[in-house]
Each structure stands twice: as structure tokens, then as C-alpha cells.
Amino acid sequence: MEKIALITDSTSDMPKDVADKYNIKILHYRIIYKDREFVDGINVDSKYIYDNLDREIPTSSLPSMNEMENLFNNLQDEGYTHAIVVTLSGGLTGIFNGVKLVSENYPNIKTYIYDSKSISAGEAMLVEECAKLIKKGMTFDEIVNSLPSLRKRLHLYFVVGTLEYLKKGGRIGKVAGTIAELLNIKPIVAIDVNDGKYFTYDKVRGRKKSLNRIVEIANNILKTKKCRMSILHGCALEDSKKVFDEIKKNPNVVSATFGGNISPVAGVHSGPGLVGLVLFEEE
Image 1 (cartoon, rainbow, N blue to C red):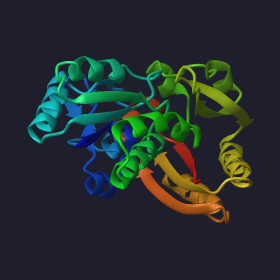
Image 2: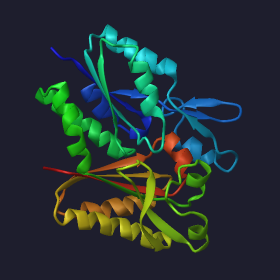
Image 3: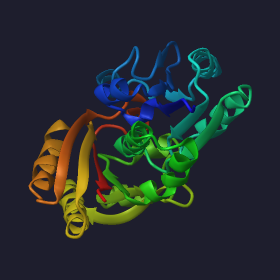
Image 4: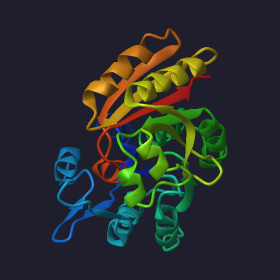
């Protein structure tokens, strides 16, 4: 009899009620300042990160090998035979290889690691879909084989207040930086499903137009698809609520979640002003 564990990381912004409901395990990134270190979402919150960005922009690090080892030890003790790990996009992080390295020390647990090519609620929605399939009684192999088709139903877009933090953190990918800043060009950023890096999906001039464009993109998708919707933000509560309220009006939104602030570690790299949209197509 298969006993399947579900694992993700703290950049997924996995809602606590969903994690508790399905017993989803979460690995935590680390946030490193010159004189102190925090565990993402455990002993630091997003407000602390944004409040201190003008003093110091911290670096980030993968979940510790010790945390990963402890997790797999616990899975072994609890009798898990299989594990599905859904990670932050591999174009933004090396967590895929870190988990793979640790999992190889536990041959009794058959582990599959899936690069979500996503982040935040996009990553979380894929994990939740896996959890539902486990609850339905689907096998490990059936769930693993369904992941690419689940990923095709996912849409993620975001805007940031400034490109400064993506540039400094090396997460700029294929998003043009300096000239865009000078001209007040606001790129609509998405993640390339091939290499998992950020790219400019569209660009407009000015903050207001960028938020309106996010709404337009959502409504264009919702013309033909019924979707679950999630909005998250990075120190941009008012703007994100406006976007949320606009998109929520669409009759093809089957459920709408206002997710609040993105994870502290994601906030390090995106800076204040992020408004993010995730849509997941219902079948």
C-alpha cells in the first residue's frame, strides 16, 4: 500500500489551512543579513523584510541540508513509501538539486521532484491538486504523470514597483532593466515554461496601466476558461485589493483567494510594490 508524502517549499505561500488539511510538508528558505539569519516564514515576516530594505538587502539561501535530512528521516519513521516534491522554478533556485541529493540517501522512499516552473500561489495550486489526487486514491505514478498537464492549466503574471531588487538579486532573467526604469516602463512578468526564468510578457508605461493590464490579461483568459484565482502582493495591499476586486467580478472566476503578502524570501528579490495574479483552469 502506497503512503505518499507531499513536499513543497516556503516560496509556495501555501495557505496554512491547506497544508494542515493535506499534511503537506514545507521546506524553508533562509534569509541572511550581515549579522543575523532568519528562517523564511518561521521567525521573520514580510513586513520586517520591507521595513529594512533601505538599510540592507539580505541574501537568500536554500533550505538547510539538515532540515531536508530531518524531513526525510521523519517520513521514513512515519512509514511513507513515496514522496512528491514540488519546488520553486528551477530557473530561480537550486532547490531541485538539493532535494535530489538528500532523497538519494533514502532509497526506501521513492521520490519524484517536480520543477513547478512557477512560484507562490502557482506552486501551491499544483501541490494542492496533487493532494486532491492522493485523496481520490490515485497512485504515485498516476499523479506524477498528471503533473505536466496540471502545469499547462496554470497562469501566473506579476508587476513590481521597481526592477531594482530583481536586478540586485540576479533574478532579472530576460526582463530588460535599466532603460525600462528610466522610461517608467512597467513590464508584466511571467515565467518561461522552458527554462523557468522570468521574462517580459508585455510592457506598459506607468503603474496604473500595469495594474489595468493585469486585469485585462486575466479577463482575456477568463473569456474561454473557468478558473480559480489568487492574488498576492508585496507591500502593495491597496493596489492588489483593487486588482482582486476587479477580476473577481468575472463570472468565470469559480473561486477567489486574496493571499496577502508573498513569502519574506520572495520579497527580498522582488521588493515592495509587487502585485501577482495566478489563475488555474478548472476542467
